[in-house]
Length: 358
Image (tube, rainbow, N blue to C red; front, top):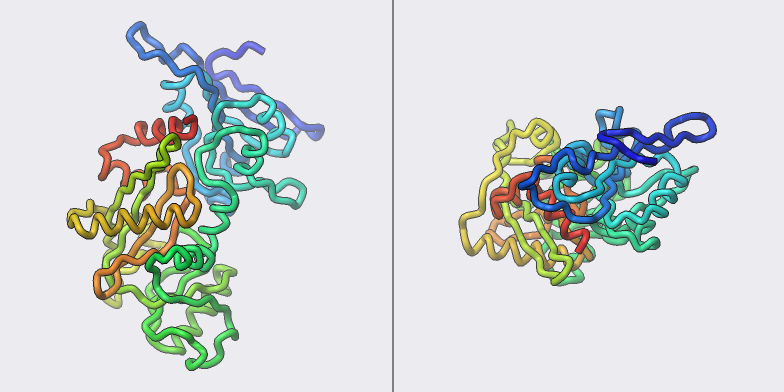
């Protein structure tokens, strides 16, 4: 089939529902006599049909991206860039048969006939490059308790903790660490389940918050020693050729809540009410960078990611959690790239793609 500018190719299943959509950019429309020559590589941007119509991000999405924008950016540098929507496994098998040089996707896994098929493991089996970490690493960081186990095994600083659910710790004496505590879902992103009641100072508040997380987030709780210091996030870029890690620290300052505390909760993130600034203290910057790089290695991260860190009352940095598929819109990862390296959004996307192809 000969494709023209923005021609859309559809493949339909037996029930005539959409099973695959590929949007192909014209290979010459962006080219002028003085334009740099495009790189002869094929990149497919893989998405889910639900992302085209839903306002919420499904659980099997690691990071949300603007597929059309990513396609436009990559099409200026690479000869063949397409968006492919996967509805069923045959669509994925057809993609594998095409053998693109790189798959650019925020999808973690597909739900095919009541079973999960992890995209990056599937691509590994077919020898196709992708842009993020594999299933084992993503599993390790998604469960915050498991992530802290790996961090502790690596000898890195993280707050003392335990996990629980309602009726598991029935008395104050059964709690293994001292108040104040910080309580959040053990497996959730975007600060879901975190609010002004996440800092608990007594057993009654502890029970109430654990029950709230169980009821509203359908999750066990991760309970940690409360870290009262400043909050940071460190973007990580890995050079796939050399393995060298570049750390990009930023400080995140949440507004004070009604209790006079700075908690980076769900609503603050959702409405972008926090302040993000450069880390200017050279000592803190170095400590954050070293802890973040060590944590990335301990969690078997690949290509890029983000490590969240907080200081305790003695100004000692502690690992909080990791995101090995950080959002690729204009969130903390992009801001860490822009503040530390001066990268534009386009330069960030091109760097991720180049790294995946290395």
